[in-house]
Length: 305
Image 1 (cartoon, helix red, strand yellow):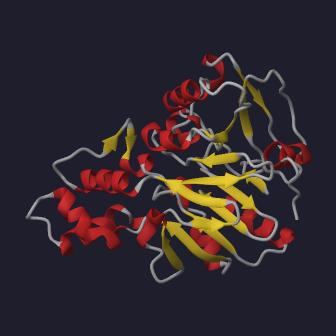
Image 2: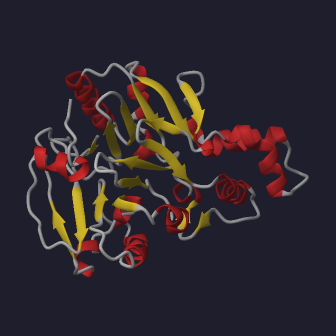
């Protein structure tokens, strides 16, 4: 099992919000978790060609552009077999009940869902869409584990109800209920991919995770809560990953490393021109990692194809 966090190395605009793009390579199948820009998509296609993959499955964590914008290019290239994401039209009756406003009809709710979740519904008819709220297994060792359906629908109902706010737990509803994926590495330990999730939504899945993608590109307020919880689990060598941290304007945190003194930053650049930023608690080791070391970090015995 190999997991690769894409970087923006060599991209035309280093200040752009390129977003997340994470590859999960089991050795026999490929899963892509988000793809936030066309340049990410082009690198995914390069990777698939080198690894001899003709098809991949895709987890779209949520509707935001910096997680979505590369996906249409991959679909147009014919390499995506199915997309796991939030399919709210399946839950109209439940949402109407949660909203509890007789003025809202199924037709008006349908229009609002399609408007608010425009990126997701632009995919209709172009690719096989799978309801991720059922928390399906997506590959050998890979499973969607959150958010819990009732919590997600309750948050969406709040968002769609004009009388309610559009944030929860300090995040937009889009972000808060991102789909989380648990990847079982070759050493039996878990990697938790969180997208832009709120702390309340990821908290139930943190307990058994050894490797954690810090939500919302390393947003400090969420990271601080995760550190506090994981620090209670003595004896575990927890490793944290941040994807596309372009600073506090896009989630993220310019002060994460500075304020949290017991985190050491490690690395940029792997042999495939993809990179990962890692914060590792209880470890004093840091420095550049080669591509091979990066594979070892996540997979222990994992090999790229």
